[in-house]
Image 1 (cartoon, rainbow, N blue to C red):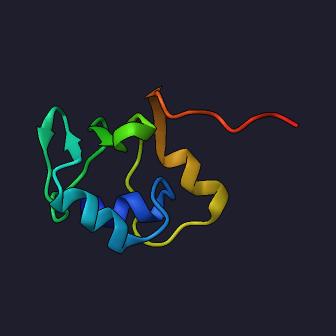
Image 2: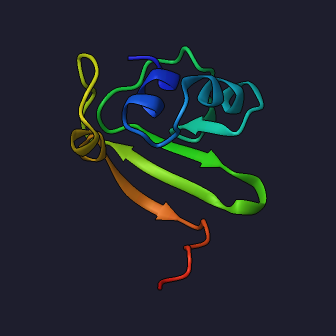
Image 3: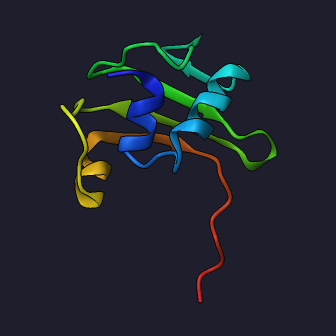
Length: 91
């Protein structure tokens, strides 16, 4: 599965166009190398997304789905390795 499609299906990034844009800007890397949107992802890959001043997110791909998945299944496709994004305040 393409990187931009995986980011959208797993709901790491809401829209595929945004995932594409982040890849074009060089803000997404796979296994430590800048990645284009068309790069194929496989289980075990480490994906890092640099959100600039909003922090970085690194996830490990657990499984690559065949097609669309439910919202609950999306979170099961990856494991968060590190997340330096600020947390929203708790109410």
